[in-house]
Amino acid sequence: MTFPYEPRRHQTEIMELIASAVSSGRHCIIESGTGTGKTVCSLVGALPHAKDSGRKVIYLTRTKSQQRQVILELRRMSETSDIYGLALQGRSPSTCPMMAENGELSSGTSEEMSRLCGKLKKKGAGEMCGCRFYQGILESDPEELADKLSEGMPDPEEMQRRCIDMGVCPYEASKILVPRADVVAVPYVFLVNPNVRRRLLDWMNIDIRDAVVIVDEAHNLPDYLRESMTAEYTLHSIDLVEKEAAAYHDPEVASGVSVKDVAIALRKAFGEAAVEYLKGDDGLIPYGFLQECLMSELHMPSTKLRVMCKNLVELGETIREERQERLKLPRSYIGSMGSFLDFWLSCDEECYVRLINDGENPSFEAYCMDPYDAAEPFRDCHSSIHMSGTLEPLDEYCDELGLDRAVTHSFPSPFDPANLLTLYVEDVTTRHRDLQIDPENITRIREHAVRLVNGAGRNSAVFFPSYDMMERFFSDGMAEDVEGEVFFERRGMSQAELMESVTSFRASSGGVLFAVTGGRVSEGVDFPGQDLELAVIIGLPYSRPCFKKEALIRYCDHRFGNGWEHAVKTPMVRKMRQARGRLIRSETDRGVAVVLDSRAPQVTGFGAIPVIDPLPVTNSFFEGDSDPVRIDGRLSY
Image 1 (cartoon, rainbow, N blue to C red):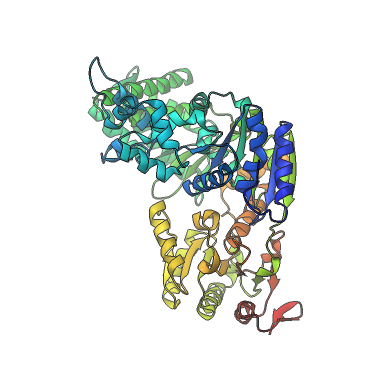
Image 2: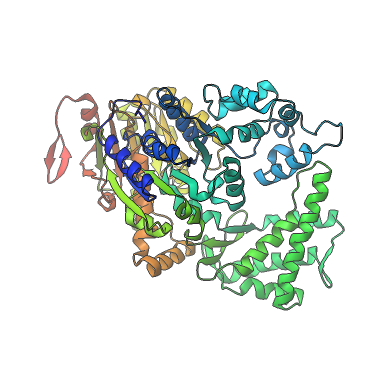
């Protein structure tokens, strides 16, 4: 299969490594720097064997923009090769135009929309179905429709517009195209969720053993797998349960016990857990605490408690079916409470930790510390390719997911390393105890950051270690001291709001984007050329000490023998490298990263150079008019 570009350094090696792994049915774990063309290299490496052996490629992404990139690369490859790719999205307002028109229905989850869709698709003899877009599918010739929709290999947005213009459902139309596809680009959930995975493999008409799986931005996968196995239930959800119970005349779910009785008992358990175990942001709850609270309040033994939970689940299912018949979202808060309690009482004590979390809406959480079980499809597939610019240590990644048939390799970026300068200053830190001893640290950090972005006058990003730290600086008036136009990545922003802010920042001259290290901007947004030239990284983004993190450290100590490195330091290093990686996206990009923390040498492989004053070094780098000198190992002029 022809590579559609002039190969850069290392690209041929990457493709050969992937091709060898796929042909031998092994897993391939690769860290490759910016510019190695991970998307196109993985496709060119994997597709020849997949096509020759009748296998299909499942390309996993986190965002629609990453799916679009897959389609763009496949278009280029299709100019010289017979290949076709398709990007699939789950049910949502973007793939279900009928539900997007209804304010209540558009708020549904993918599962709720799927159930309601099943109801709307049904019709009696001689009747139209309940969705005009699905009716459009029924009235179309499948082959003719597939020919029209596949023309030009549309990306997700183009597919949606094309389907709506033709009066057909984008989700159902995509299913018709799946059997044609050599590559199907899907969100992680399509492979991780067992029910969704079964449907996807059925549409593709393959077994998991016939799939070649490519994982984009694979450094996100272990945490995603943990979250997929984690269950959380909020205090405010109890209000919704009580409201729903009243609407259905508060039915019994055990002898002498009504839904409202269970809600009252659970609310009391929240209160007792907060008093006894909450320390700061969270607290560890003993294994039998919630079970004993409910047994005591509801006057029942453990066996009846389990039966009661199942009755709550069944009652919820009855409510969902009743709402579905009325063409309402098939949602039940009672059923969700039952499912959570059943999960909480049955999840493995060895791999799970039970927590109470503080905040405006406190929650109980059964947190999964081990992604191994959720990684099963990645072990069962014919071959999997895991790629990221920040995946080291590779052996640790393999161990965590149980990938024992793996080849691993790290490739540097092909771009000139002289185009990136990384500095750090030594008179500041965000280490918690140092902030307490020397509160002027915050003032000095603020002065460094403001002086840098104002003095450089280039599009700059200021990355904070957390939203709380960002808000602390904002409350001190930092944004008002910045001379350029200011843009934000705010807590709780929708994706549309975030991209609007990013787009405006890119179009600015000398603008400043305030964001969070490890947030959406630092993890997945490209800033080519002069869109971003200076990154000011405030502090090291170590996770805040909490009981959840301590439990994960202990678990990793037990399993890998390096709990702190595995659970704390490695994620911190990846976040730092991802944030700095926003600067260099092409051969001609040049950028400066300045770390405002004396602990920068702790960032393995970061290569930050100590500097007396970062501003003149930064400006001289961009102007190229003189070289810095070292004074006691520090850069200066």
